[in-house]
Amino acid sequence: MLLAAKILLTVSTLGYSAIPFAFDTNKTHWFNHSWTSHARFHCVWQVMSYVYIGLVSLYLIWTAGDDSWRLWVPAILALCAYGGFWTAVFLRKRLQLSLVDEVNGVTPFMLPILGECDANVTLFSSAVLLLGSASAVLAVATFPSV
Image (cartoon, rainbow, N blue to C red):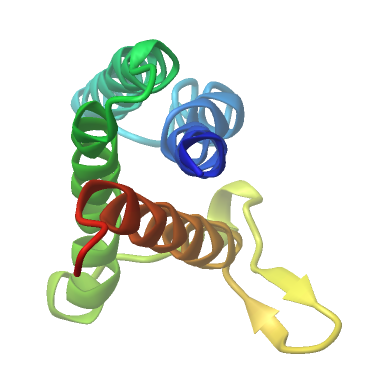
């Protein structure tokens, strides 16, 4: 049972750490000279913080053995990372934020079934569902009588 939670937590962890690193270390974010150097500084800081938190989480996930309590730490860290994303999504109108940067060539992601969707929302929605599934498995493993 814990193996399933570990796999789900691993995928969820990679969603907030490795995926942003792969997609943001290019001319659309880190090397986007239309952004101020301070904005790019914050982008590098945020992405690398998630990479390092992800590495700690992966270590905790795969060294936990049969201790389900140790798996709650990576789950909570993932919740914090995704919580920050969803906070920005929900505040985007008020703070004049945008999910895409069409000026610099980052266009909306299209899904044939749903129409226009943002790639980040699509990816992070899936990752949060995996995180929820992992948390449900952890809850059963940690509190079997509930």
